[in-house]
Length: 131
Image 1 (cartoon, rainbow, N blue to C red):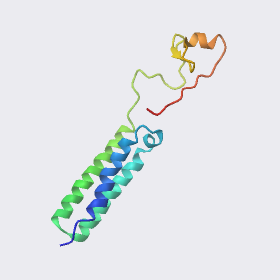
Image 2 (tube, rainbow, N blue to C red; image 1 turned 90 degrees about the vertical axis):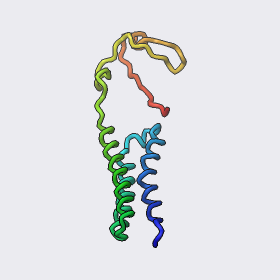
Image 3 (cartoon, one colour; image 1 turned 60 degrees about the vertical axis):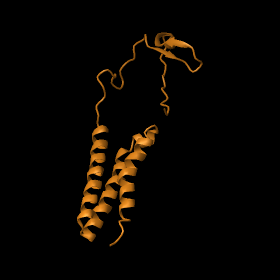
Image 4 (cartoon, rainbow, N blue to C red; image 1 turned 135 degrees about the vertical axis):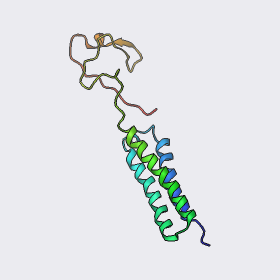
């Protein structure tokens, strides 16, 4: 009987890709490419399926089916979650901010948008940090 060493790389891809994606969610690069991680997961399921077709054993087919289900679940999850609409309370792009909006400056001083504008146009930049 051959040992099921094929299962190790296949399972590592199927379960490792979602685990790595979840671990790297704090990095903007990982958040913007969820389908790349899903492709690695599906590749692991494909390896398991190809091996099951070669071995033609029930255990191989069951393992390939389990890994395939997990990969499809992750693929559908990332596809659906990547298309979640914005919440209704979020203003659309290009909308004017209310003048009573209060922010904290880089020096730690609290000021309103009306104070910061001072009657002249300004550019407000928000830095998206990693948290």
